[in-house]
Length: 233
Image 1 (cartoon, rainbow, N blue to C red):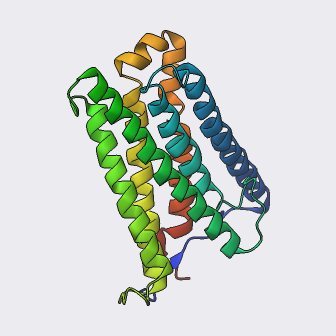
Image 2: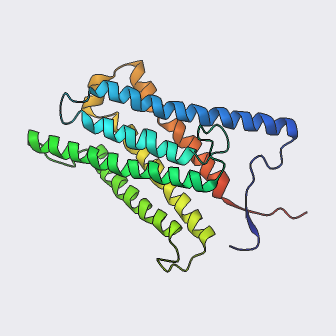
Image 3: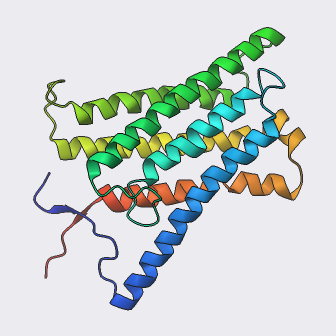
């Protein structure tokens, strides 16, 4: 990394009183993001009535993968409001990998249920924006998992980049995947199934809910990994 670049500390330039207010607001935002991810997963599961059809398992698996597991896998690195109290970074990294493995497994299962449902109903595939975005999200998730392997095994894979730069690339790509997954979840709310299930004011609330964890995740990653130039005095 260039010598004039450093990672930005949280709350730099704030007074002590303003700093504590900033910390508590961040903590409340992170906790709200946890609650939103878990709440979305639970409500979508109840609305889907899993077991009533092959399709009913698709939103269950996908919400579990992206609204819950991926969100928790990122937020556990947050210093404010994380329910996981690992003191060592190694413990957090292992739990992160476990969450991301669950994302891959649940997303693959969700894809399988959707394909089986379409084939059973003899309906064509990839006709909606949601389905196209979903395929892109799954492909990006798989690539991001491969990128994570590069971070853990740089010497085994004989990579020339430094570990710090690999972590920066991994975090940046992870942010892109999370935002892509958020867009995919939002597009699902324009599907015929969801609009027939949720209507009125509740639909607008569902439309906005996935955006909040995305903002918190984006803020966390940029604060942790976005390089800033040093201020010369």
